Figure 1 (cartoon, rainbow, N blue to C red):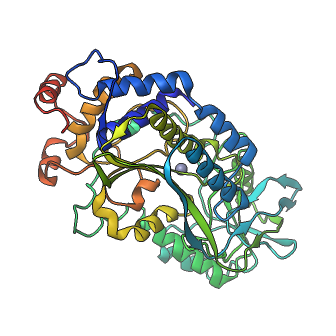
Figure 2: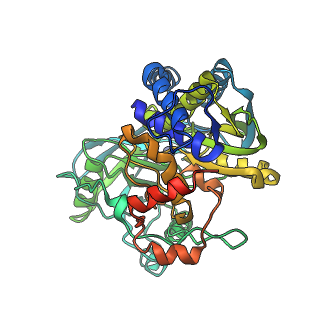
Figure 3: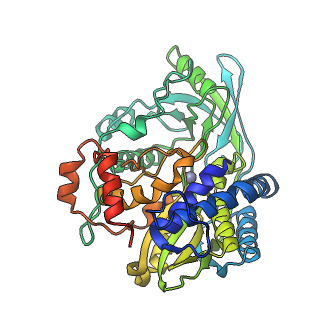
Length: 473
Ligand SMILES: [Zn+2]
């Protein structure tokens, strides 16, 4: 993990949101920015003394994958709490929330048995039940994109091994436009306070998926095989237990991209039969799981809180290093550096390592419910869940009104070579569990008028003029 990644997160968290008194730091070159001295201290501390890589290695290698409800995740909760204490933070605790069932992965084997024998590589989806022995059935491509199309398959799926995705090309690798997230058009802004949430663009897809599962259940499908859609025999993973951590209805597994395409090709030419056996198990009663929480108390407004967070949980087919060990350890490193430097934020900085993110941001939603009476006191939330690669900038999630304050904070961090803040909004990190960000300064109407393409168009000259006139209060 690059020290730039951590340094950017720490500086932004402390300076944008909590405000810092820089104490006896040496004056920085940019003496028009009141936070430049603290920035310099933070950058130096993390550059010279970072523990982020050691911590990431321990989390990934020694603790390993951290499925919510697993003993490894509890171990990670306990270990991160101990690290926060070691670094000198206060109010360190594990905040519990409850899941209906834990899930334990067993074995998963599959092979094509007719018209020719081919071994297949599969892995159970999270919260999938086992198959109760070996099942053998025909492969059926469920070519139905809408609910109306489902009826074409009525009475044809009993005991079938169902595939339902049209495969994309795996090779050559799909071209990646590394800037696509930065240049995409602005999306519908998040709701203003007191207004109903903006419908998720995935809601319609989710509704079809729900109806499809219900249809499969009614029709007696034996197993669902999903395309990992990755080259080189890699597997993908998600879960089928939903936000409630329910026991999945139909045994479901991911198959390698190569295996999926073989099935897809073969079923076009005639009957294909597959044998599958999966063994998984469930916890038989609800269990508590935990978010790890720690604080640096504010010196002037301790009741006002800035949250710096990441999700500690992961799926279990890998080590959980990039999703989201990197983010979690950046948060831990932020806590270490700030505590060691003795910087005094005006507001309390609360570090939260959420869990249950992979199953639907559940730990962060439960956090919001548990703290619903305190939300007015939360001034901002910074969440790190961007995986590998260099951090390019902050995505403001279409909160155009926040661009100036964030721009002021990024300005002294020139050595990190960040891009301008982008309006990028992503779907699927723990920031979604709460609907707050920096407090706004402009209206939604002006936001739409000024920022049609999602980029900040205020010139650098104008912005630096504004910075000099209006340093962050
Ligand atoms: Zn993630």
